[in-house]
Image (cartoon, rainbow, N blue to C red):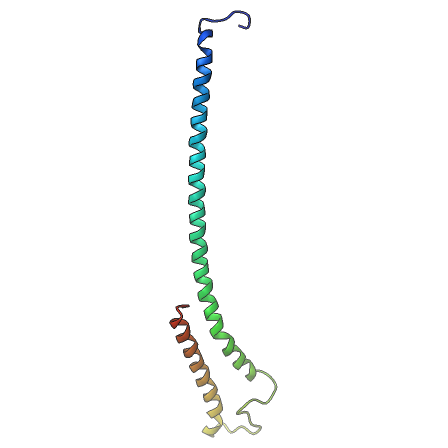
Length: 124
C-alpha cells in the first residue's frame, strides 16, 4: 500500500485536521473535568479539616478542666503531709473529714467555673 495512492488520499489532510481538532477538544474537556475534581477534593478536605479542628478544640477544653483536678488529687497520693492529714486519725470524728470535703467541694467549684467560662467563650 505504500507505492500506490488510494482514492481517499486527497481527503487525508482533512481527516487529520478533524482528528487533531477533536483531540484538542477532548484534552480541554478532560482538563476541565480534572480541575472540577480537584476543586471538589479540596473543598471536602477543608470541610474535614474544619470538623477535626472543632473536635480537637472540645478535647482541649475538657483536658484543660481536668489538669487542675489531676494536680489536686495527685497531692493526696504523695507521701508528704497535706492539709487535713493527721497522725492519729479517728474515723468517728466528723471534723476529721472537713478538709477532704472542702477539697472535693473546691474541685467541683473549680470544674463549674472553668466550664462556665468555656461555655461563655463558646469553646464547648
